[in-house]
Figure (cartoon, rainbow, N blue to C red):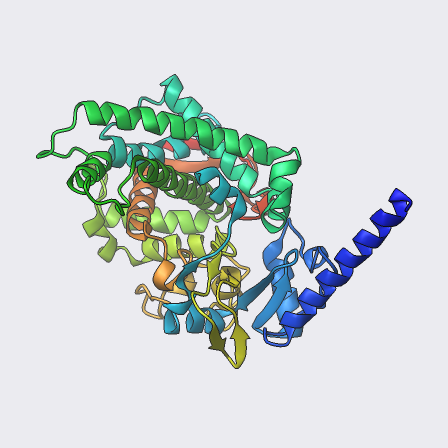
Length: 440
């Protein structure tokens, strides 16, 4: 038989099989758009703005719907009620770790204009370094600079449209060239660096006087050396350190960069924050966490920054741990769950005019700080961000320290500043901008 005919027949059978598999499962799952063979609904998702695509689809199919990202079904939760019901009311069932192929695969001058990216990456990174390595690095240390460069590049890669395609068609990871290869190399280089640090700790370890997280882990590993099922292995430690740096450095620095951009854009907000800082803290001592309870406007601004920028629009993937019924739909065990945090953080019922930057969203009529159940930048439920407490502390201390000591000045008219994210894949990335830090 002609090879071309064989190829056509094979492809036709593959398409028919794909259609049959997709249709056979759709009767049990929530409704959603009809998928195409093999590629599913991928053409209905804009990889540059996934959240907007999910919002548009929710208008047609409701707050719980099914998408086929490739041949596998993914259930999308859109809006506060659906997200809360799944992640909090049914938290145990929806607490599974969803498939995220690329990271999963990798885990086997004063008063002059400047781009704040560098300094705002250095500071949070050194916080994590002190926790993990019991060491802080000079900002000119070449190893430190190379390390941060790889972290920043990896986050940008994760937020690119190409990676959204790779995460839905994992076969591309193995057989196609692209930026994912750079991501793997960066992760491998960082893990090698972590391994060297771990070996240094092993050589100087004092079982009775741990210095940092690595020492604590190594001590526990030694205590469980006779347990064949122990999870305290060197490989697990390397992955843990890698996760802590990825989650605890770039997310904080990106939030701060975006926060300063919005403060430049809204100078009247900045003035109110600085007035509160100078009234509560003054100019002659450093801010501390005890000050936060006396600074409702600053607290409201920090919350509004996180709400407005919508840093991680769809959080990380979840999965259901068992077959479950949810809102009269049947969701099979292992099904990937996407939660649209955008739909919660920008809910117009909770936050009037949600597309406007307004600290008043978190203030009551008397000017006191007002909490909101819809505030979910760290997600919610069983898999809420483990570093939420540290992140809140860093954001408060970094921002208040900056505003206590410097007046922020834009090099262009604030009205002309563009705050539109340059990428909204895994992370919303702010545009580059210049800022002047003038001493108070």
